[in-house]
Amino acid sequence: NIQYFFEKMSEASTCKLCLTLRNTDPQKFPSQRTYQYKASMSNTLFCVHIDNFHLLEYLRQIEQQGWPIYIDSVRMALSVGYMITTLLETLQQPGVSIHKLPPPPCGSLSQPVALQADGDDLPPFSSSTFYKYLIKFIVS
Image 1: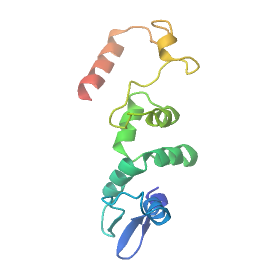
Image 2 (image 1 turned 135 degrees about the horizontal axis):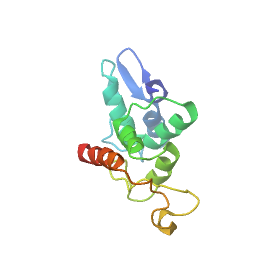
Image 3 (image 1 turned 60 degrees about the horizontal axis):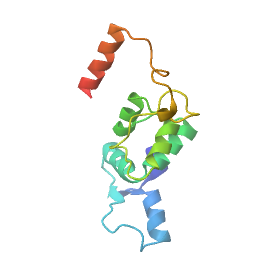
Image 4 (image 1 turned 90 degrees about the vertical axis):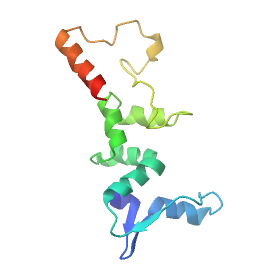
């Protein structure tokens, strides 16, 4: 999936999406944004670039192509209950970023969470489940 975003040449790897934006409208392209990297750079740096600048497109491609998920912030969001579709929707809301997400939606998506009766979406209580979630909370 790195190849979808980056083109590797002998001397440098270039972000295709940034290059297209820069060539289409140079005035709108952020002058401080790095879009070319040394060819010897690791995929970790490319993942950081995608996370910072192309996350919505990355999520769309995960949904369409079934790519494995290599970006840690996306893995974390999925581990707390987000689905790719709900993550895409949430990230398009004003003031929301992958690092500042509201609690994931739960229960029926047909009605807002605030309108659901208390406890409709909760599993039955058990001490083992409580400890499991408590440990997840402490670790995160």
